[in-house]
Length: 344
Image 1 (cartoon, rainbow, N blue to C red):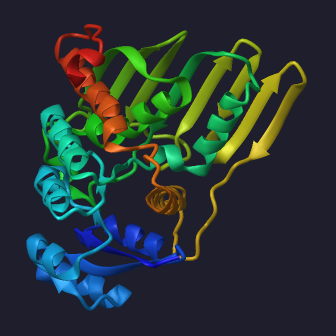
Image 2 (cartoon, one colour):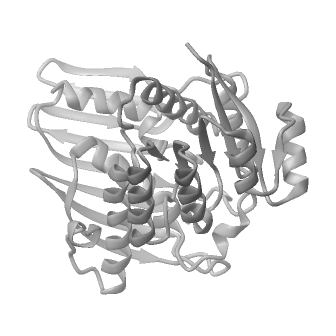
């Protein structure tokens, strides 16, 4: 099996996890890296032994000719970079949020479709092993037909120290974190047909909202998605996502510290679904770090077998439409919207 040689664009805070993830997949290597900041570029290249370093993405595509590109930059640069990759016929995995507008997202999906290259969004929360386990239980009918769900992420963790730009945007928690929780709701209960949202800004030092509560309607089910970076708990749970599923034959609860409880006609049972602590991972980030490796392995499998990724650009349009609908609903006092009307 031929080795896949990838390229990474963006050498910032989170990209270190992606570099570690690629290094752990047999038959895959990162052959080139790119960043406009020479200092970050040098630091990443030295850390991972990458000699081919570029400050210009066009030059990287032309000279390195990668088999795929991992775009790990922030959202404002995504469209230019994705369309550039498509013009070179290079498959793309792109960091979330995929785009700041549905128009840009649709343009990127179309560009890759026209070029005949795969496009996947790095939407990794649904690839966390505890979330995968909940998905398995739902899919196999352990609790019957789900009719209610809750996806909850509440924390007071200082995310701003590592990613100071999060405090500067007019949009924050739905776009940065809620997007993951909304995608989990889609993964577990199917696409949403309606959404109502309320938001609040508790931390006066930031510009955007740091609390969001969203009510979603699915086919035969309802879910609540709630996110907060203003919730001070006795024990900080960052970055754990808590999940509740009520079904016609029982319930699933993914609780604190990755304790899973399944209750049905056979009684209750408990599972420890703690994520693996990979050799390069650190607590408490190991949950997310494990999911990075998992989504990258999925990408490689899809490339080798010609399958569309689960979190393809086309699929992610549905999650982005929920994000946009949530912001519109909150701005309009909680009006219920159909996200399909925004997807186009």
